[in-house]
Amino acid sequence: MAKPFTAPPRALFATDPGKSRGRLHRESPSATRTEFQRDRDRIIHADAFRRLKQKTQVFVAHEGDHYRTRLTHSLEVSQIARTAARVLGLDEDLAETLSLAHDIGHPPFGHAGETALNMCMRLYDGFDHNAQALRVLTKLEHRYPKFDGLNLTWETLEGVIKHNGPLVDARRTIDKLPAAFRDYEALQSLELDTFAGPEAQVAALADDIAYNNHDIQDGLRAGLFEIDELMEIPLAGDVFREVMAEFPKLERDRLISESVRRLIGLWIRDLIAEFQRRAAKDQPQSAEEVRALKHPLGAFSEENAERQKPLKTFLFERMYRHEKVNRMMSQARRVVRELFDLYLSEPEVLPSPWRERATSAAKDTSKRARVVCDYIAGMTDTYAIDEHRRLFNLEPWT
Image 1 (cartoon, rainbow, N blue to C red):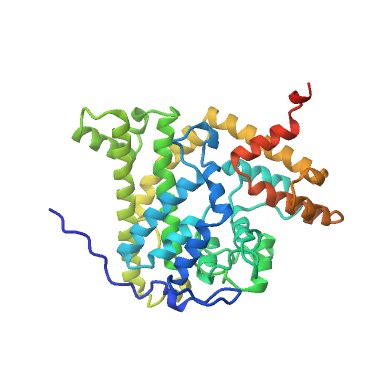
Image 2 (image 1 turned 120 degrees about the horizontal axis):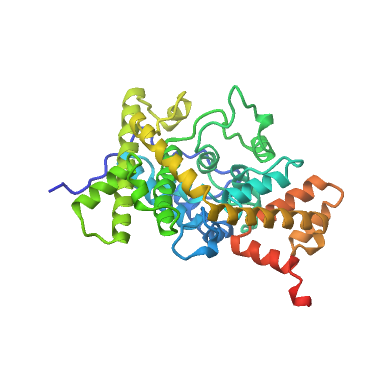
């Protein structure tokens, strides 16, 4: 029998909440929470976080109650990230915070909504969900009397926008980044040319683990592909065969759940082992030294990364480009484009206070477009559909 799990001691390179670089606007420390726990709580209570409950991953939110939304996905990412962070001796609270916030800048309708908004904003600095997350966290949330945004710690902001690696390198200078990054850099540097801290790197991999494996479950549930087709895919097929051999009469739903559970465990163990291997080789003594490395500590092993590729290709072809999904996304792009065009040309139809913000920028089309973009990006799938119906459906008139 395996021994009960015992958490290892804190790693030397873990991010210490007691040594945070602080917040843009100075605040007294909390008597009951660390700085990162406080950040987590602010994100959970944010309007933008609650709206993730009806923002899609792959399926539009009204398609069914069991498909993942941005909210359920973020919760699943946080569970995986906390598990890995605990084993690695990292700060669990920061890993959780970054996981909960990582999708907060996404518009309605997933990647289709982002593509449509970026096209609408092509003359006005474009749209990028990572830059939008920074806008949400530093400007668009209006909860506190002394500042806009959530006034999160430096480590949380840095981890949210750099979780996939440096934003500035030899090929991309800061003037090529969206304005949100340039504007905030003038207030507080987030060191855009370095990797994020170790907890952010773990959260990014937890994101990969969650969506790859849960897309398998959602795709099977939606009938976009069948278990027999997965048998031809390395890694996924191996695990499904293992479960079927162990439980030959297992009903379909339990077979899927058990196989996905084992796949998640396999990926988590690989993440932890590769992180530990790299940490042992590089010997970082602090989170700052992790950031200064020329490569990330957080990664999957070369073997597992190769074995993932056929699965990602399969999901892309059979799920993300499935006729059913394509039709939904085509409709979604049309909803976003038509709402944007109407709001931009007729800002008086916007609700208050968005109407006031847009009309105050009447002589600056770029600023007005950004107001419209912010409003649409904050919508849930269902609200965008209902708003489009209210503004474009003339049936009630007839």
